[in-house]
Length: 328
Image (cartoon, rainbow, N blue to C red; front, side, top):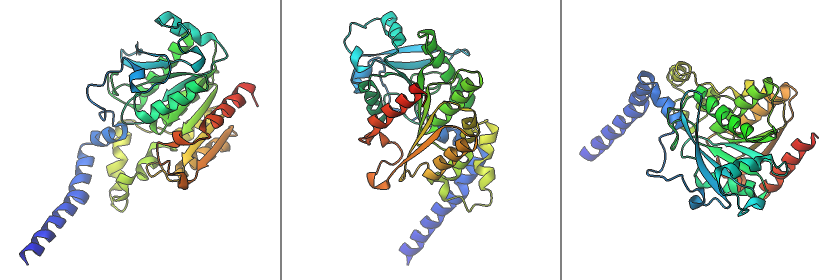
C-alpha cells in the first residue's frame, strides 16, 4: 500500500511539474523559449574551427572571420570546388580571387539551430556541393560556435548580409545560390527577399525542411504538443516570440523572392511537419513565384536532417542550378 501511495505521489508531482511549473517558468521567463528556438549553446566544447578538413571536409578549404556592421565577429568556412583542389590556391588572396570563374557556382549555406558549421550532416552536404564543382561558404550566426554576440532574428539577417557582401566584394557576379536548412530556411528566405526587393536576387533559393512561420513551427513542435490543450497556450508560447521580435514569417517573405525556389522536405520529419513546408510552397505560388516542392517518402527515413542521404540529391541540385542559370 505504501509503495502504491509513493508511486502515485511521484507521478502526481511529475504531472504538476510538467503541466504547471514548466508552463509557468516559460511564461515568467520568456527568454527560455528564445534559447530553445535558437539552441545556439548546444555545441561541442573546445571545438577548433581552424581546420575544416579535420571534420571531414573533402577538399581545400579555409577558416576565417568577418565583422558585421554592428561589430559581431562571424566564423566562416570557404570550401573550394573539386576541380580547384590542390591547385596551388593556398593564401587568402588566391582563395578570394577564384570566385570570379563563372564555371563554379557559389553556394551560401544557412544552417539550422544547434551545433555549428562543422556538424557532420552539414559537412556531408558541403561535400556534395564541392563534388559538383561548387564553391561553398558556410558561416555561424552570432551566438553560435565561435561567432560572438547573441542570436536574434534581426541579428541573423545582418550576419547573412555581412557574409554575402564579402562574397560580392570578391566577385563581380551575382550568381550565388542560397541553401537553407530548418531555421536557416527562414534566414535565407528573408535575406533573399531583401535582395530581390533591391533588384539583386540570388541565383536560386533551396529550402530544406522549412516552415512557414515561427508561430506555426512552435505550435507544431513535438515539445509543445503536450501543451496544446492548455488554456494559456498562446500566452505561454506566443508572448516570448512577440517580446523578442522572433517571427520568421517566411510565408510573407517568400512572396518577394523572384528567383527559382526549390523546397525539399521529408514526409517523416517529426520536428517540422511537411504540411508547414507545403503551406510555404502555396504562399509562394499564390504570389506567382517559381516554386517547386519535392517530398521524400517516409520509407526513406530521412527525418528532419538527413535528406543529404538521398542518392538523387546531387542530380536534383545540379538540375536546379542548371535551370536557374539558364533562366528556364
